[in-house]
Image 1 (cartoon, each protein chain N blue to C red):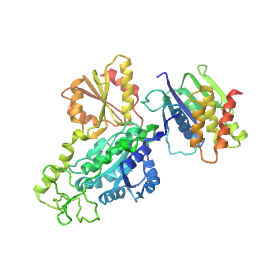
Image 2: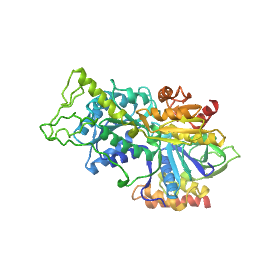
Image 3: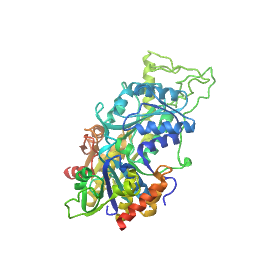
Image 4: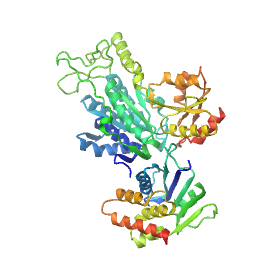
Length: 378
Length: 177
């Protein structure tokens, strides 16, 4: 018989389990297919662990509410899909500049607009990075299995808290809705990171003050003993708005550097049969499962294929993709859109190798055969 | 891939095929195997053609969707017409007796009174999915009997254990008869 902690679970369910394991205490959202189970299960589970769930009037309010929940000190998450992700962009920018830790799950479906509500896609790759205006830091993670959905949801909370930034879990309909075996790790196997609380006195506290070697300011719960101001305007270390170009420059530099300087900590990826590979597939999320099958099928026919699977989509894994590009004659990017991640791969890899794409955006998962055909073509 | 079994359960919406797929996958987990369950997912909750898909394997399962299946269950004519072509050569087709036996000599066909057993013998049409699972299990041994029973009892609503145990028994008997 299977062990007690081995379960058959849906990706969306594993996302909630991961969030709870990471310490989520607040969920706000507006249910949308194919992410609805995340809201549904959160509404059942949160009250049992002393947390709160609220269904807001719309997607925009759902995003605003988790910013408030997180500022007040609770680990907070929302979940959505394409149309809702578009609506959340303005407040996502607010979370980025105000440095509010939060997790936004986007279970991707076919777009644009209301598109294909029940079919998978990976069309929000660029939106995850550039959907909100202005230069801003972002972290986006993409799981390929139910277990990894659990693990990366925990990571998403950890990165959000550690770097005081919104983190996007960029999953898709296939991973969100499929059920597969998952062995839930025990609490002592799970690393949990909490935001750093200020140590200064109540009078001296400046909410955005950092030491010389510090990139992430300490964070007090809003509404508590420490009184401070939070704004989407450019602000100085007191949290109050400023038009000073030096203040603007130093704020923007710092919030970008806190991600860029820590990319080795944030970079999560898997390499599969790449050691002697002559052609490398680069794929993420559900497509990476097809790509792995395609690699095995190609190997069975004597073709030296391998897979590079980024779990960290943003920041882009420049160093690793460049290394892969130097090693192989061909790189094929497989993704369920008409060519998004491939643009970054071309930028990093074009001078070292030939980059091609295996793209599809008709609501169907790319099959191993389609990727194998592309391997044979290049 | 030879130790990988791909199963498609088809019928009409409301026949409990998705729950059937979940139970089958959990039974496989009980056997210590890997399993992936997915479904066609449309706006229609009742009626129309519905299907659930399960892949059972000793190894990791990468591509999670069923393409050509080893086992096809069709509880309605509509579903059989739609999915028969996806059944592999030498595959097993299980149909309700109300479905016309198709004209394919490269497959094994089992035509059994699954719906009638549920509605007349057990007097609960909604256990047709459980009868069907027992039939599939008895024919193909895709999971052990014990694992299937354990998975059924874990998933069915409290208070319906006896009815469902009975449905399993009648399903096993249909094949033995």
